[in-house]
Image (tube, rainbow over all chains, first blue to last red; front, top):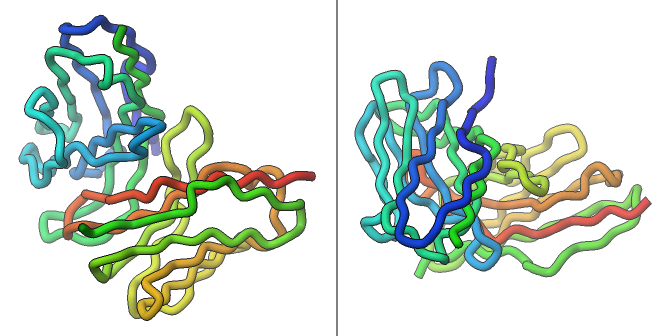
Length: 116
Length: 112
């Protein structure tokens, strides 16, 4: 089974621009979560989608948004980029069902975003 | 606030020894804790999950304990090898969905 894939792997943008990151989960996984990782703050939860619905949201400004498609693929968007948005953005998928559950998450390799 | 904390200082040990990493939580009682390994430039990889009613869980050279009295989980790697060098993260489920709250991680360096 193919793992979680993320595109692009590296991205360089300038302040004020916007960016869209893509994530393809493991086949059969309907839950997709997004995380931001920085040296200072560590891994922080952004949001989670299940069956095209956002079920959970972290403490990030509205400039961070996401969506999930019917095939479970997900995208996240960051508008009006700031220098502090430079980070590794990780996507993870899991077998978590509608009723919930505590399942392991499978992470992709991440997208390294640099904002200049 | 609910916190999950790991020792941010790197842990350096000699090959063959047992590495012990600590994860402490405050102001709540998680029903589950998960442990992940992360190598530089890569996403975390799941290692073990332990429930609050499980005192201990093992997988090959790995062992995790969960002490609800001390509000602490310990992660052990026995007979450590240089290939075990990585950052180890503990995480708790904050809800019954795909939202994990991670500790800062502890970097382990195993010297040959």
